[in-house]
Length: 433
Ligand code: FDA
Ligand code: NAD
Image (cartoon, rainbow, N blue to C red; front, side, top):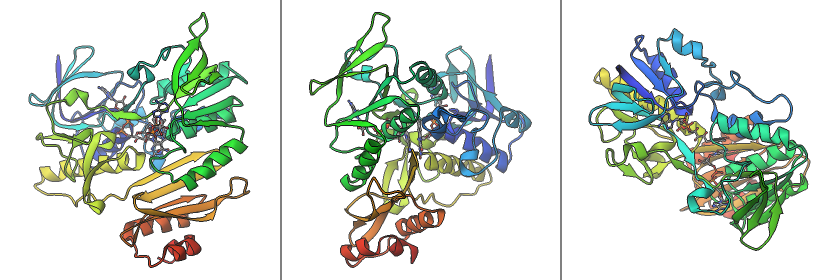
């Protein structure tokens, strides 16, 4: 039997939750809106999974971090959807999308028809089995994307007290998970191919701080090599990680964070794509009438830099969802919304550290402040300068006011006369803007 809705949000993650809230704010009648998710729980703030969810003491648990608490909003509990007349359809994976017929089919054979579709399918993890790494399907090799993954990892951490953990990958997941495994008293080794961690964003100077800080916390770091195979015991549980440089590491738990991939395959050939994502305009509308794409899957016009980009971070997931819903509702009244003018914002937290980044990490970079890993209260940052203007700013250990100041710099892009002067002024350059 087919069900028909005026609006369907496909996905149950960050964008989906914020889109639902925006629909409720703008006004939807009972039965008009459905949210379809393959997860078993209502949308939650995904960043908690690699942080508080795995803490050894008082870990974060649902319903504590349902959206929209991550941005200071109300917790949208399952009851909230019922009260608003929004159909929350969980444990339901969509396996077929027919954008021309405006219909979705679930793994269980249910059919959902819609007038407007918001694609919010997010990303999936890249697996070592995707590259045929030998033994990569052994037990106790974990990935982290959703709450089921986090539950399995949590159980393994509890079951392998004082054991050895190897973390494959030196990006966001690698850095956040290594820290939380260490807090759980595991013996942690990180392995990544690049000369320094998080090269997507960090300069070598920024990375040197985090590598030093992690080393002081007892995390072992092996750079410039990759995992090429795994040995398991007779129960199929991972026991060793073989590295390309010939070293072999003991392991009771392996966590892999080697990147994500946007989940767009359902729509292949039916919608225009760009840079690995679904191409949208500044209202997150695709080239197919009535179909919008938000969050990790959207490749949208980043007005500030005059180019199309995809962003895999939570702030954009929230804001793009709100923009799309406002645009859908405005279009019904024959109106348009203001152009999306996004300032990229990424952040991370681990151990006692917390950094924020705004803007673009292109051009020359200049480091300022105290980036000694052994400092009792490290506070340092970096500006990126392109064509004589500051275009990006990073700050570790900033106060809310200081973080606001670097955000303003990245937005305003003030000119700089001398890089030396900028290095000397450091944070005061941002504070006086
Ligand atoms: P998201 O992945 O949140 O949601 C997609 C949803 O669609 C999921 O519920 C999925 O199950 C569902 N789905 C997919 N295909 C489906 C199908 N065919 N049928 C039904 N449902 C389907 N960012 C940041 O800025 N700071 C941070 O600290 C962190 N921390 C962090 C930790 C971890 C562990 C991860 C994995 C990610 C982060 N991120 C982050 C990134 C951030 O969480 C991410 O960019 C957003 O969650 C993206 O939101 P989306 O809604 O696009 O996808
Ligand atoms: P990532 O792209 O941040 O890092 C991938 C890392 O994998 C690379 O830096 C590299 O070190 C490593 N790598 C690549 N191939 C490898 C190989 N064969 N062997 C060993 N290492 C290899 O991706 P991620 O850390 O997996 O994160 C996945 C997604 O989750 C991303 O979208 C990310 O933005 C998101 N996320 C964001 C945050 C945050 O914003 N704080 C936190 C967690 C996750």
